[in-house]
Image 1 (tube, rainbow, N blue to C red):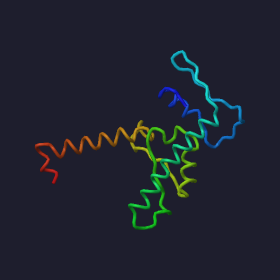
Image 2 (cartoon, helix red, strand yellow):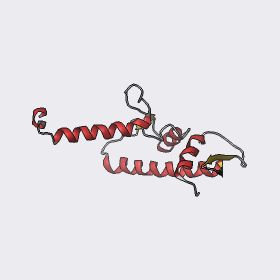
Image 3 (cartoon, rainbow, N blue to C red):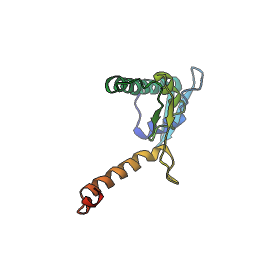
Image 4 (cartoon, rainbow, N blue to C red):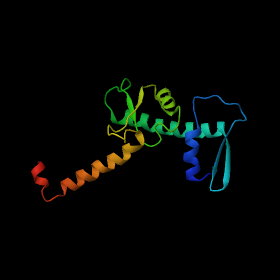
Length: 140
């Protein structure tokens, strides 16, 4: 599927992996004077393939890097697309056969999953600055 990045992001918000559309259902979006139209089933299939790839990586990590059974543990997800694709959390949960929960920063006005990356980077930058500070020895 050929489409600009901005169109792809906009299409993510239109997709619902749990819905049942007819074979002729289309997803449409207009961007910069162009009209983009794709079969809903094809877009959903591509998204499921991408999510399955992520699930395979998670399964491989769980098998290779854990010495105990973690099947009963909840998998926490966050990030910009965590809630944009309706049905994605259900798909991942079903594929991994585990509970999946979406988390977000506990900061007023920034309590959405898409701000998680921002706060992680800020935390990392502040810790790095603190460790290289002239007064960093005071924290030890």
